[in-house]
Image (cartoon, rainbow, N blue to C red; front, top):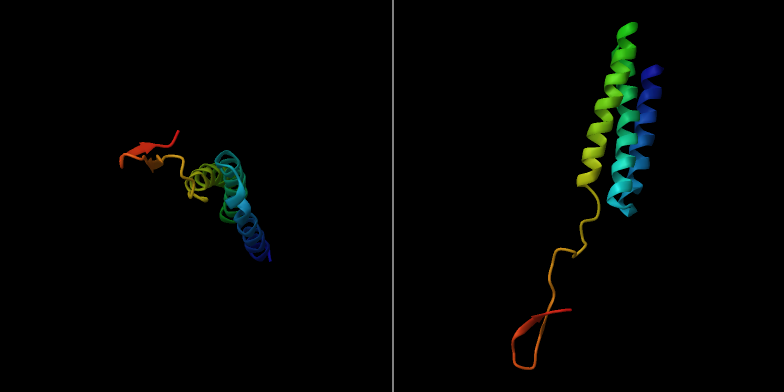
Length: 99
């Protein structure tokens, strides 16, 4: 039963992170870190036993936060044209950067 609850919580967390596409990169990084910490803590809690369970939960949460933040930072909608220069053709036939 405990593993079933963990799987359900993991599924809900993954579905909740799909809304990150409309967030800014900083917001995605924070949401990814929090989601990763939650998922890592849940997985660490299911692995450990006794005193090791507490250590595994803390380690899982820490590693999950780092991994989630890193993954979220690299994901998302990268269709912005911030690093592209636009040009227009002048009357003389040459191309000039758009001001």
